[in-house]
Length: 145
Image (cartoon, rainbow, N blue to C red; front, side, top):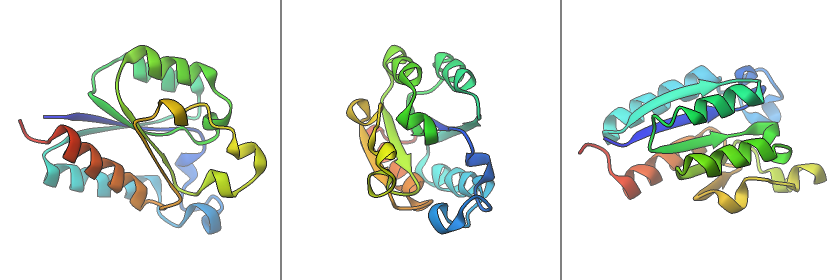
């Protein structure tokens, strides 16, 4: 069974109340519940981790108890060489997901330390982007063994 880690960066714990005009009204819990249900249908094992701390995200990657990552690095997308290095070090493919389209927003958000090493990037699709990533992963790596 393919093991997927959904790794969520800073401030995503505030989804649903944080700038809903940009990020939508879905909470992180509702996004995770929907993903868990879809993963069960696809025969994919899924785990979730969110932190506002860069080192905690890196430590979680270092556990290497997953086959592929769905990553919303949030603000760390634009700043974290350390997160990029960790993703390269663990040798696991990852799908980069952004609720909004960073390239259509502030100029500083167009800097992306992860895009060129991601297997795929899904941006601007709201919460649906996570499901799209999961479905792409299941299609590529399979679900039930």
